[in-house]
Figure 1 (tube, one colour):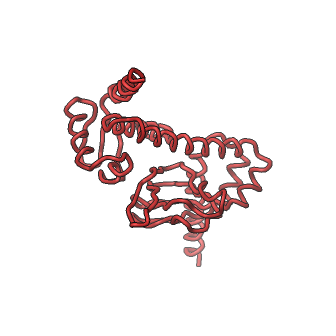
Figure 2: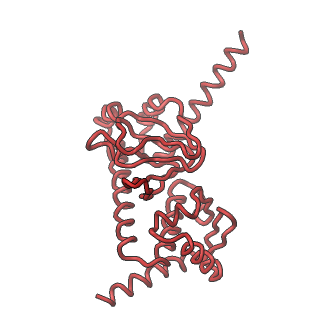
Length: 249
């Protein structure tokens, strides 16, 4: 019997540690708010590669905190063609797309084994009502997602292929840095055809540009591991294209 109780307490401790880790990813919260969220989120839901957290058109009544792993967001045409609209990583809060209508506007699919915590809208509203720190955090997360969407629209409408891929790595580096990981060592969870789909490019174009970037000393590619050797060089590619657009106008 003692061993059963010991196992139970060990499991509770692991779950508590996991919860603290997840909440620890959300900076700027008071100790009281962290404690309340720890009690709220419980155990993570584990998804494996290819599993969907939710689908476009499904009912949505919660936000989800990514504790580990990564996801791709996509919409599907009537013909069944997939268009990737973004990627989401550890510490991202997702599910805002269902706030307005109560239904999700896109599908979220795991790119690898991932853990997420469900936070019901209703409960989150109750906590946030008297907590300005949590309100600011939620606004920050919403603003970031809107900013990413606007950058994607601008990228697809105004940038050439070389700029798009350079901007992709720059933004991914920023995301890694914000979540406390190395900004110049990227382990890509998404295959190249997903990158090509997101950037609106042919797979052959992405492969050719990766070879060119590597030959130019901008990065080093080994399977899905990408080491950014010259971030300033990638930023110069983006700025150079912006300058050409300005001159054209």
